[in-house]
Image (cartoon, rainbow, N blue to C red):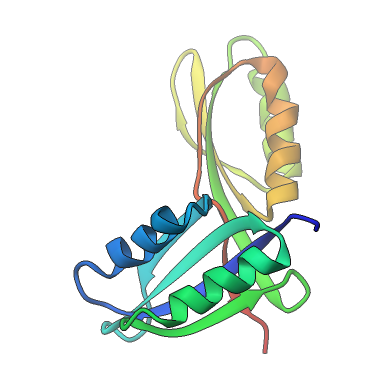
Length: 159
């Protein structure tokens, strides 16, 4: 069985404790969450939970079946790369030192944004798919990454 990374978009009722129930399901079943995003949708009564998980088709099917059993879950969509638009936000604090110009060129090529500058560091924000953000991160590594955070993917179904 081949493990693959899957993005699940889960629409849930926006009540306190809903996220705890969803996360608890993963914990009880021993499924690891690669990333998790939660935000209110255009309807304040509904939130979208975007979960990235890695597993074979059996595990993904079990996760989906178990999620459907939760009362607060409205809809679950398995978002493939072909049928969805996926993005993640990454912020990187890099040692800019004497190489500031080179870093700015990389930022421009990737259409990233410099969101904070000090005498020795820059904080750069980039939005894109995982591969783009990974390539950007690899190019910044030689300059000295001081800190990094990323949201993990969030996605919407096309059409």
